[in-house]
Image 1 (cartoon, protein in one colour):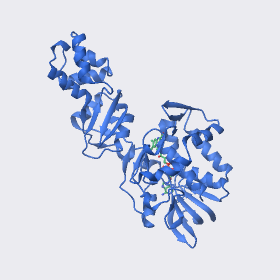
Image 2 (cartoon, helix red, strand yellow; image 1 turned 180 degrees about the vertical axis):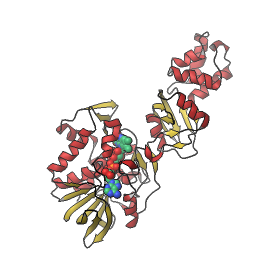
Image 3 (cartoon, protein in one colour; image 1 turned 90 degrees about the horizontal axis):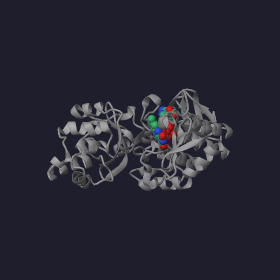
Image 4 (cartoon, protein in one colour; image 1 turned 30 degrees about the vertical axis):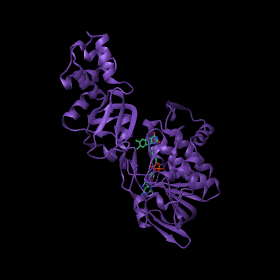
Amino acid sequence: MTYDVVVIGAGAAGLMCALTAGYAGRRVLVVDHANKAGKKILMSGGGRCNFTNLASSPANFYSDNPAFCISALKRYRPEHFVELVDRHGVEYVEKAPGQLFCADSAKEILRVLLTECDWAGVEIRLKTSIEAVERAGEGMRLTTSAGRIDAGAVVVASGGLSIPTMGASGFGYDLARQFGLAVTETRAALVPFTLTSQWKARAEALAGVSVEVAVSCRGRRYREPMLFTHRGLSGPAMLQISSVWQPGDTLSIDLLPGIDALEALVSARRETPRRRLSTWLGERLPKRLAQALVEWHGDDGVLAEYSNDRLAAWAERLGDWRVKPSGTEGWRTAEVTMGGIDTRSISSKHFAVTGLPQLRFIGEVLDVTGELGGHNFQWAWASGVACGMAL
Ligand code: FDA
């Protein structure tokens, strides 16, 4: 079998690249070892796929080579993907500012991609494992469970390591190393935190409680909801900060973001001296959390009884709650992989390996990781299109 292009990975980036190259007149085959295309698309955004973010910009991405993502993101913008889904009549909602989700189901996004692949003449072969990828003359040769395949170019879109049960593998990193490329350290990101001992028991007792916080670590700060879980802490604020958190780090959590807690407590003591602290807290925080806080610290009373020092201690607990996670839930629940193939040996225009234009890498397998909120799919679309147009 001979193709102009073989794309490894029928996920977001691979399908986008394949359909783009197909429309450009290339004979394209997509191979995937999974039994279904786009499994991560289907499970994304709680089954509704946060398929882009209207405000997506290079500032929303982490990479050792931050300038790498600029070119592709500039050329294929969120509006372009919105145009595509509009053409297919997909209904969507803006759940949070800029974050577009399917109104109905993530299946709609996969349907758009598979329909476009079909119209562009792309072949998709599932349940096919790749045993070897080598150079062969001017092109590339793949040895697969379905036999030998020759290709003018191979595009690797095999994604990151998160959710191994969905087909994630380290294939792309191994292949990159085989061709002499460096791979930066990989770790689970956009992932909930786990707690141990006393803190785990406290989180467990509050499981299901959500509160808007501002969390800080390593110079980054995110103001978003935090969720207590049976294992520890989750919700958008925790997923976001997990991308910079390193084992041993302590998180600083502001439970009253935007409020000067000391000033607010002092004026509450002046204006409502008979009010109990727990009542005051319960007007600003979920009631279960307010009650838990006074129990943890064994300190509740009418505000008039509180000295300046006692109020200052509470202001610190509320504005700078220090939590040291024991770890994260890891690859089992992480949304993305931080790190990946070092982009310094990859063209930011067409995603080819320097000195080996027959081999290209796109999507999450590269060391480009988006923040939460639709940025990771925008990277998959943008890198897929940039590569597909240049094949
Ligand atoms: P992707 O992982 O989509 O595809 C890789 C493909 O390669 C898979 O089909 C896999 O089977 C295949 N493959 C792997 N190894 C192979 C091998 N050895 N041989 C053959 N095939 C192989 N992002 C976002 O922007 N908005 C969101 O709402 C969410 N939500 C979300 C929820 C959850 C639970 C997860 C796990 C992730 C998200 N994400 C997200 C992240 C997003 O899903 C992710 O960044 C993109 O799917 C990455 O696209 P890729 O095409 O690069 O990899």
